[in-house]
Image (cartoon, rainbow, N blue to C red):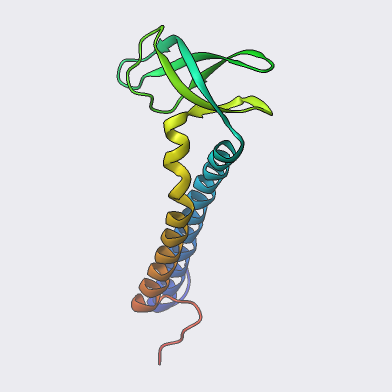
Length: 146
């Protein structure tokens, strides 16, 4: 790479800032997608009792549940933490009546409602952190040092 050590440091610092900001944005967008999904269930979902019909895993337990909807019986594999239920146990789930394949444990629906504010605060904090660190290290691309 051509250039003085100061130029290489500036390019490296700028690249690090851009990559870090991109990764932060990707995490925030991914989490916000999940929050929108949960918010839809919170606003329009139907909560009901589901029966555990199968389970897999010892440490990371996944369960298949069955429940009745207006359109008939639905089975769904829950990937979220539901504790340690056994086959035949009943757990509360919330599903979207327009699409019963969209289902979460009822406890997850309430838990995620405060996340949008948390994500906004996280984004602002990280943004200012990257900006401050870049200026401190002298790698902010729009500030020239004398």
